[in-house]
Image (cartoon, rainbow, N blue to C red):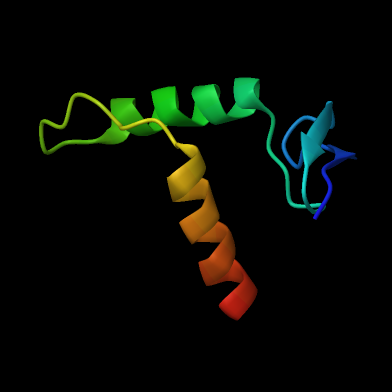
Length: 64
């Protein structure tokens, strides 16, 4: 499936993606920072979303 450009769901910035459900890297980073600040259990780091993780998430969403 070829990638196209779609507006980011959070800020509207034109972002490359495979479907219309895209979030730009700036909004993703901002979310991760906010999420880290709200964690109360001592977790200090969120692993980056890798290509493999993104593929698994897309398959889960497609199946849903």
